[in-house]
Image (cartoon, rainbow, N blue to C red; front, side):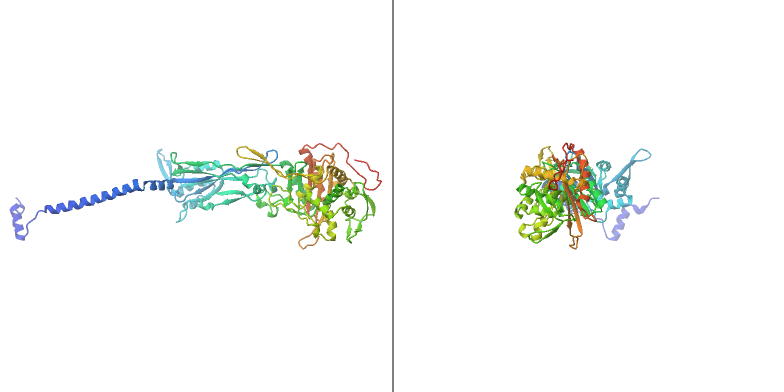
Length: 632
């Protein structure tokens, strides 16, 4: 049956019953709505267009630069510090490429670790700091959890945090191959000393300076002592720079790249013979151990050139392991620590009088063991001996103070002090090492009556071991003082070599006076003299022993320094050697503590340097008037 309620007439009837009739929407309302939508669309389009013009036109370059800057990384290309070489070219100090590994904590979260599943599909197996730590921990030999914490960081993500320092280039290449975003290198040049402590007192050491490395600033080695310090400007090159663009932790092959190559430092070649240096260091260490001394130092100089062939101090540090050595031993006492030399200083008094012609080798003086001089000062010899007439040669051989001061009185103080200055006392030698001491030499106007005499026999003034070596080398070099130097040449990175430039030489005494002194000094190694322990089989030695009292921390003269200076071979000197041994218990005589060092070093040096044995007998002049002597 049809539903009559749905018929049109029924609907109309119901509508009429309610009093309302349906009205169609007006055309104007629809138009207004369409216009509003169109206006909104137009406005949005306009805004987007303006924004597009702003981004691609007005601010395009700036935004492009910002994006590039975000992807850009700049690195310092450290210049290689120049090598330090010995006289034969053996490397004493060099630099090797090393890396520090750091993380940019803001980028590490981008890392995704991919691997193949059982079906051979490449899928993501991890991400972020945890996955990166798992890959890096075995290579860096770090705990995985600890490393993960460093990679992740805290709330304040940092752009540069060290993970591992001082890794090899090979290890860095393995790390780089992982392509982990934010894992970045810091290249540097590590200073290495391949011979351990050999020449450590000469080479010195380097320290690190530069910007705060924790903020990404590069550190750089700079010399702190020795040649490393004095030649720092020469050894240090000019750093370069590398700027690249990266994405995903890898360098963009087609990205912007700019490089300023580093300019390596120059090499410095020393006059030092490495093997002789090693032997000399062993010799001074041995005497310190055997004698119980506080320290010892020694130097070997080449006659005629002033070249330092070896310069040693006891307890020399290893520049690669400074903490193993007391800081008091990090420098060179041979250059920095002046001492009163005692009787080795008498050589200048003898030389001055001979050069002035006031005495000759066989001039005779009456020599007691105690003497009171015209100015009222009483001088004693170290050992009691009978009063007897002695020659200048005998006084030098037996080192009698009472005879020496009579010889010294034959010339004025001003003349004697002038000779001492010409020998180099009171002035720096000019060696290319930092902190050199000039020693102490007071003007004669400040001397009292006793200083007038004590300065004649090596007290009342002081000199370094190096100065004593220079002093005796004058006698071995025909009376000429040649500037002491330890640098032979400097070679730039391009191979251009420049020899060391030296000051002018100084004629101190005449060649004839120098020859006379050589004859006199050969008596010191006579079996009955003070320096017999310095004898070297097959070689004539011209030398002099010395012993001086030095004050302790309370000013009391409880300590002694023993010295020995010598020339080899005496008839035609090739090398000069000076030794100082400080504060050995007991008498501490130079003939007992320093002369054996001279013998040990000379025995090695003549072989190492190819110095032929003596072919002439040792000179033995009369010690007493009318004495019948023969030569060895």
